[in-house]
Length: 142
Image (cartoon, rainbow, N blue to C red; front, top):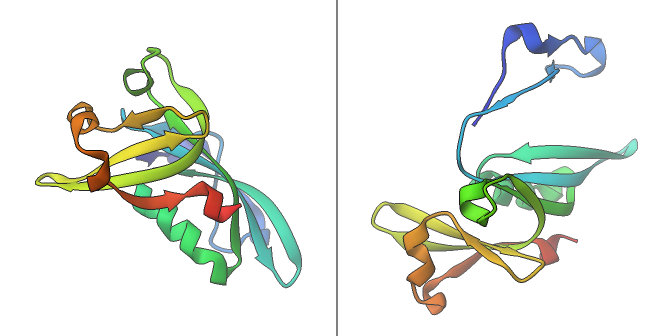
């Protein structure tokens, strides 16, 4: 989850009704998140924007918002070092997200454009690949 503080808020004025702007946010997690480049399309044209998305369901919801004028251009996975094996956070182009239902909820596999796959739970690596289902495809968005 992303956390913000009142003292970090930057007034945006009347141009963005209901919007808030922050000088910084804090990320409270050890799980990956998504850096999404998108177009916000409306009758006035297209506005390029970047979204930081915390959960897979929120990414899927954004992909489904085409009817509301959103077009995803690129998704990058921002992964913690324990997941990517480097000990440091990395940002890499995402190809797809696959999911498998377990007793404790959905486990995700993050398939990168490089061909590498990261798993949110170490034990999920050993589950049969035919049991996984496609949850999100970046190729379908571009």
